Image (cartoon, rainbow, N blue to C red; front, side, top):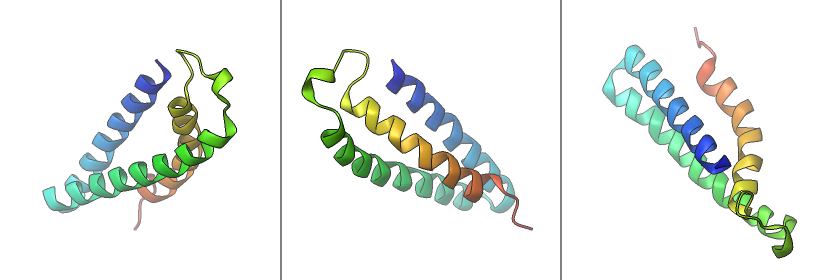
Length: 92
């Protein structure tokens, strides 16, 4: 269930990024913003999955909190700072 909430948050943020850049520079800019968002999410999830594998033993895995959930939570922390500074700030 936690994964669904995190994915929903990412979808809402991707729509925000698309709308913001689409209004500034057109559909190409909007798609490029979403592309950057997707690449950062994909690469970040792979990196945090690697760390989650070693940080969470098998006996701690439950139906509600798995290694993927831990990886997504670990990913959410740096993403908040990066996306806030990159996408939320007005650049002039």
